[in-house]
Amino acid sequence: MDRGALIEAAEIIAAGVGDDEEVVVQRLLERGFEPDVAHRLLAFLPSAFARPLLERLGVTDFATDMEISTRSGKTFPVRLDDQPEYVAALALARDHFQHGILAREVFEAIVYSTADVAAVSKALNAGADAEGAAVATVLLWPDYAAYVIRPGWVSRLWLWVVRHLRLR
Image (tube, rainbow, N blue to C red; front, side):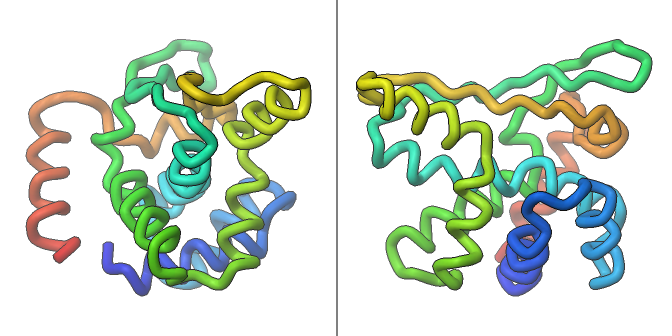
């Protein structure tokens, strides 16, 4: 995914903070994003954007794996590094922190809507110290299960192709 498309997706997601997930996915689809990409962007971009802020607040331990629940209640493991949208969004967020690439209101709308930032903020407001804290990403919407990239050699090969051929 090129950086321009990622920025466009961030603007759409920021404008849809508080809206139903399906509404935001529909907006992404209308702008030409594929269904699997649209769902993964909505699932992973916010947490990826929050990470640089959390790092600056002292959080040092970020879970790299998570469990995804299906509609039937089954779960399966997912690695964040296997999700190209997460990897690309994290790189963009780090660049934004250094160079101010995104509109401030876009970045803030996304970051301050995340459960990750809300949890750390609540702890800080209660007098806790974020230094050395741990954060894990959780996806509650079961529809994401159909769109995430599952671990395995095929997924890793596809991710290598995306990273080396499409992100440059």
